[in-house]
Amino acid sequence: MDGIIDNDLIVARVRALIADAVRQPVAAIPLDVRVDGSELGIDSLGLIKLTVRIEETFDITMPDLAAPGAGPLGSVREVAALVAEQVAARQAGGAR
Amino acid sequence: MNAIAHTRAEREANLRSAADQREHERQAVAAHYEHSPEIFSLVLDSRLAYATGVYADPGEDLETAQARKYARIAAKLDIRPGQRVLDIGCGWGSNLLYLAQHSEGVFHGITLSAQQREEALRRARAWGVAERVTIDVCHVEDLQLAPESFDAILFSGSIVHMHNRPAIHEWVGRTLKPGGRMLISDCYFPVQQRGDRDSAATEYIFVEALGYCRLIGLAEELQLIERAGLDILHVEDLTRHYAQTLAHWIDNVRRNRRTIEAIAPGFAAVLQQYMTVARMSFARRTALEYMILATKGAPTVDPGAWPIAQKGGRS
Image 1 (tube, rainbow over the protein chains, first blue to last red):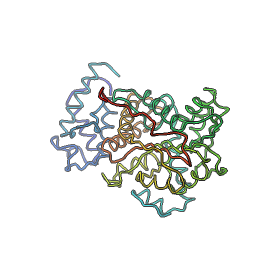
Image 2 (tube, each protein chain N blue to C red):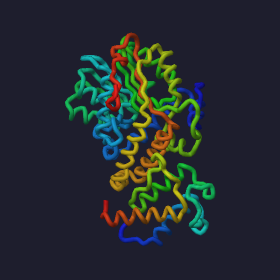
Image 3 (cartoon, rainbow over the protein chains, first blue to last red):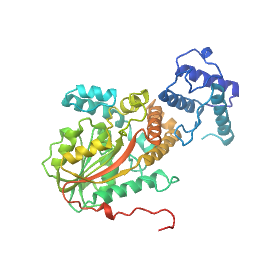
Image 4 (cartoon, rainbow over the protein chains, first blue to last red):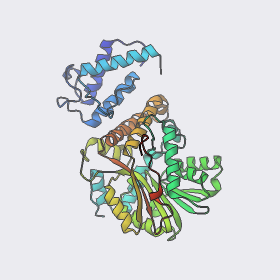
């Protein structure tokens, strides 16, 4: 993804990727719902595919799901914030 | 065939004739490995080992860990001048060519992938060992070899693709010379089930990404080896090492995503996804990685004399 992208755009794109993963309209994905919770019902493979899609889309590295003590992914808003943080770090550090 | 099935793919395999399953493996397993060697050269170590390395410490790089693994396999197989070595599922020749360069043995490899054979033979020529290396595209069950014709048989990350394990081990038992060695480095299920073996993630890695995989329990494999007349010499757990190896591969996929996508659209995601499933399975020990060494008759190596490194200064 090229150019500077703002946080609202990141939230919208992350939400769209999640909606795509659960085959639901974007409007059906509340920002406060947990991405890895039972409400969305994404299984472990679905979460892996989603994180790979996010990495591809934003050219970032998501947290290692297999790291010892790896935490849950959190809400849609929290995942978007994490993505925004990584995107900002990448833009500050130049293209990989 | 009447094997215990852990997954949907295995239950389907049990319903096929042995010949039909062999055909299924030939097609389904080859597909993954037929991708361009250029892709795998961006992800794996320089010799293209598609198997775990052995790490002395967590900060080590992939190249060092794979070099340690090659040397470990060479020490375990202890190939003497003129001895004949068979590498079943030789891939791009990682172990086979290392062993050819570090011994005076004679080597035959088989793979289901013509791309792998071509790359391995190209490397054999480049590294000056081509006169002692032959490689065929062949299913293991189609090999026509004289009894007691090989001194060592190696399976590194390959026996997992073979459904008909009793037949494989009986064949190994017949084909090894007295004093011959068999080495397996592969993936097993813990006997007490952890995790869902019929999950979408399991199906993804065993079928969608890798064509056909059959994980059995370590004890089941060992029993089949013993029934074929071999003695188990040494077994070591490399589960943690595979989790670490996969972390390096995944980072390499990330770094080379655009190049991989340009060669094979969609394949970078397949690699990262299946490798992440595998990494999580090894990290959580829902799957286990073992290296097994067995011998036909009196052993030529003595595992009891192998050093076990002591940590710290205390004796």
